[in-house]
Image 1 (cartoon, rainbow over the protein chains, first blue to last red):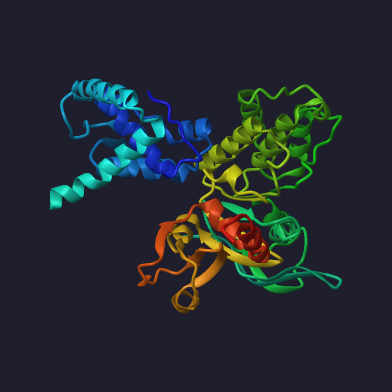
Image 2: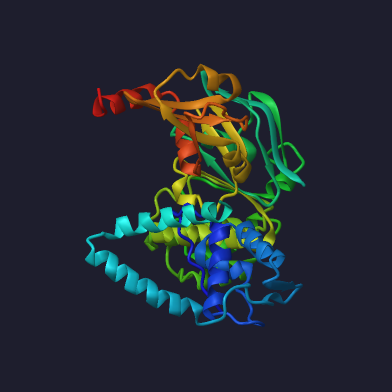
Length: 130
Length: 298
């Protein structure tokens, strides 16, 4: 079972925060196929979000084919999100850590590193098109 | 979709003072609706009209399919929690539960006890000796015990600390998830309740400024930032809600989805609090822009 954290100040709407946290939990192996997601009432009682927000998030996940609602029983994990095989994340994380160390040694502070990453991410799809 | 609240041209005068004027609002079933407005905007008046505690001087309204009035059949469907959190100070929660059983047609004492136990509110202590958060939880739980279809809450979280506020809103949202009831809760701040509400009524100076589903309202508003210039071209295709000028820059909050052709304007999405403050501050906008230009590049 996972706990959702809803960040009120985030630019990401609450329903999308739930969707992203489920996907992340699936990628990291915290949730496995067959696991049950918390019920709408459990999420609402823990986070004080609107019940429709949770329903919307679960519907989105169901449309993606990641979970399946079984009437009267709850919502269950059905598939893992498409993506690279397990282990990829930690491998890339290690090489990113090396890169961050290099950037800090070169005198970049966290804010410059974040903005560099953002610019690079935004530029990447355009390069692919070109 | 069932409509729980519908008003048309609703108004209330107290002598020569207008508390509410020309009020058209709609709230569909199952929504948690924020009733937002500055102090004195008419929030309490609207809630009292909807609950049948006051009579309008003009217009009409339908609540749960009938006209609000002091009649047991209507009142059984509506729970109203007044701002001052009315409880008997010397009575315990258990005694309040007994009183409620005598005064209401439908009453679920087991539900009250279960909810209060899970909230760690003692049943055997005088209400006056409970904390502010516990008193608010007790009052809300008693309001829910009569199984209303519509709950009206007047500034329920204003006096609570952030944690008690969160717990109060969670109890309320849980009841919505459980029973499918409709809630209207008033506040002068939207930030407190942003995550829990999905519908909005914005009152300012006795008038309705906005009413609708929050996602839809946000989708038809945006912020335009550009070099300081005449806004007449934008005003032809959009409603300008708020204008802030600095010496070199103009920031507009506009309503309307027509395309902005002039590339000088950079368009971005708007957040709930930003949109609400823009409408609430419409009168104060010139003062804000003066301040900005003093601090800017003049």
